[in-house]
Image (cartoon, rainbow, N blue to C red; front, side, top):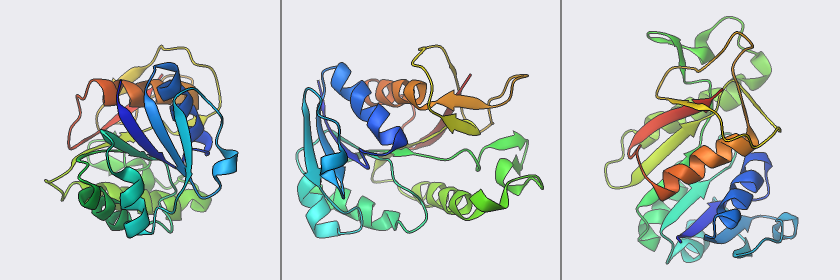
Length: 203
């Protein structure tokens, strides 16, 4: 059993990661701006927190074995979160990433393809920049987990593939459910295999 702090615990991905952590018996501090939206689950303590307030965030993170952030890239300064981790003395940091920085061919990112939707471009660009920022850090044990292109509600099947920097896809497209993504994230917390790396999950 580990003590995990989860920033953004009430969102689409965050709420599924929260349930997966609870189901596996971990103790979780579930952090959100509106803690009343956090599901009541065994081992879960809801806490009000702001990912952009370094001092108060570091107090919430202190004493945990790992921190997961599931927050939007746009409008989030990840140097504040990593600063709070350092202040709290927590080295292990896992980030719910995006798919856009994955390659569809050698040297060619999904983000740079002409058909990439304009509506998602700002968030995707900020996600890619966040990964670039994490790659400059050697004092934190970070992991960036990219979903597939379609990251949607679905079933917890437990059947999926893992990759590194290439978008995973089948003849039906590129997708992963929030529920199966959560399995891959919690597996990585329990058995770290991608320290200071990005990896991806898909069907």
